[in-house]
Image 1 (spheres, rainbow, N blue to C red):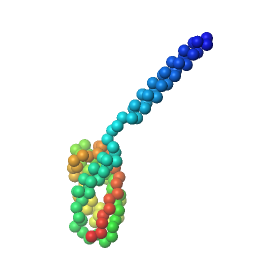
Image 2 (cartoon, rainbow, N blue to C red):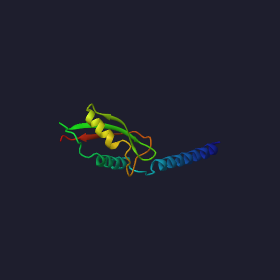
Image 3 (cartoon, one colour):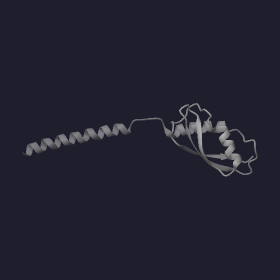
Image 4 (tube, one colour):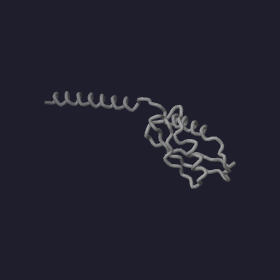
Length: 118
């Protein structure tokens, strides 16, 4: 009886070790760095936004919420601004514009944009 319990415990330890190694290898898989991807997307968005054709009296930080369509186009969902000029400017210059390396389709992205005074 003692040897049977010892045999079962050894098999249990071996199974637990295999489970730990298998789980660790799952989480160790390297994918794209999301921070780097977001930085590339942000740079492309900043390039699409040239200098506004209206006067901005003071610096304004705007929270921009968007996603990507299946064609890789930016789809603006929300612009957190009360200024109608800024709201229209961002929508006209970004909505349905293609980017080179779009993010994931249907994933929500939120990023702050600073519109500087002119």
